[in-house]
Image 1 (tube, helix red, strand yellow):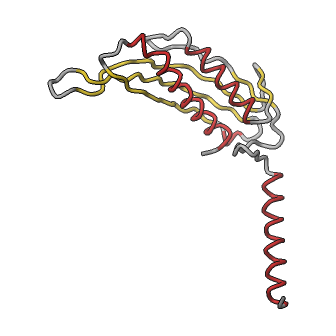
Image 2: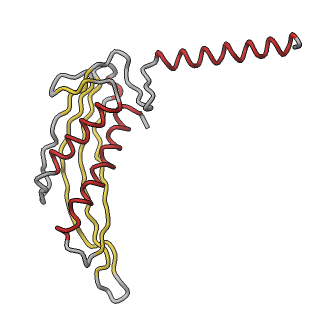
Image 3: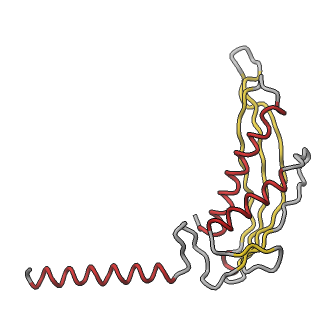
Amino acid sequence: MSPHLHRMNTLVALLLIAVLSGACTGGYSFTGASIPPNAKTLSLKQFPNYAASVNPLLSQQMYEKLRTMYESQTSLSVTSSDGDLQVSGEIIDYTTQASALSANDNVATNRLTVTIKVKFVNQMDPDADFEQTFSRYKEYDATRDFSSVESGLVDQIVEELVDDIFNKTVVNW
């Protein structure tokens, strides 16, 4: 092997080691989460439901899915208060309305929309704090009775909202 090629291989190996060792010490996890290395706890509060139309299971469902996501995708311990990272919020809208008309001006599809307001506090890095509104919706055939599709729609919407919150709080997307 030529001396030039040997030096190039050595340089590439050193750069690879530097990049990998830097990534391993910066608070990253294999799930893609970017969490301050000294953050050990996340406090999560149940989201009160202030929507005009209330789904009585939505608040608990949001809490459980968020808790499960943080516990399974990070090394943070989820607590009820005083976490290094803090997530709280409220459900501010839960509506269903017509979203599309058919050719003869009948309602063809309806849309269920859930909107939540989230507050995130990062005790390690206050510049990362935010308050943001997240909204997701699902459409369904207007010939279907809402009560027969509501549970499935809510499950899908909650999954998407939980992903949005998780990504915004610890993945920094």
